[in-house]
Length: 322
Image 1 (cartoon, helix red, strand yellow):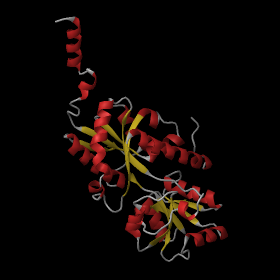
Image 2 (cartoon, rainbow, N blue to C red):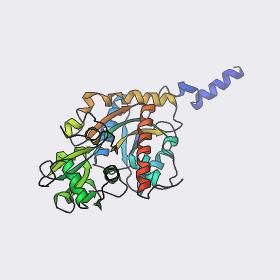
Image 3 (cartoon, rainbow, N blue to C red):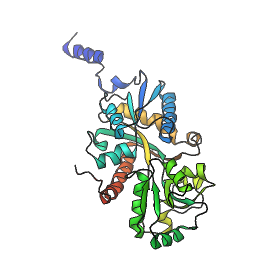
Image 4 (cartoon, rainbow, N blue to C red):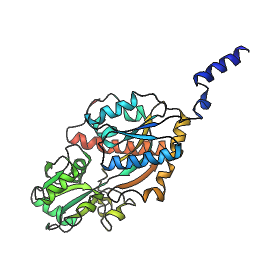
């Protein structure tokens, strides 16, 4: 056997023969890391995604929940694993935008990860109690100019809070912000009279529809799922052209940078089913879904979120200087 054949044989034995080395991927179960606890919307959709990927790839895709630590432990567990496609990450605004923008993190999202798609979406809406004197958004604006209203959000610096900040900036308002830890707690606080108005996800109406009333969707552009959740409710961009209220929540799948292109391509092909009506029709009614597929498209989506959140966090004094 000549030298060239010996080298080729050695590379083959080590699995280092370029694209052919990944032709059989995957050959073992895949781990899907979720930085939220079990049972929430992000976890529900992640498990649906994992099942779809498993069916397409022919191996188990196991969801592992790693909540806590400002999403950093879960994120780093992916980056500490080999870039071989066997460890996937459920990226989210906290892990890819809010946390890296507000503190020094041991990772840079768009440098250290390859985002593949976005699915779960949760644009925010402005809600009042059903018996509120504010029947329209315009009436709310007038009321908010006459007196400082209590604004319920889940956490300071979280997307609903940033929506409220952007709303105040755009319309020259000032609120008494009350952080109530979670979106359900925020809406319960609204119903219970702790606050006058609250920011919650568009799909929240399905759990509290008889007790709360949406005034407007805090988004610049209309998305298809708005008609499912809040038919007939305007977005800020529609009602007031030129006013911005595009704070949103998205989440999807990413792999570690350096993952071979052949594996990235297989994951992209395997995930195409998640954009079909067959898949979307299976998503629970309380979960909003807005499909974006492809590395370039998803990277642009994430960058738009970073661009949107940065000045809002800066205005709150929360933007970290790297």
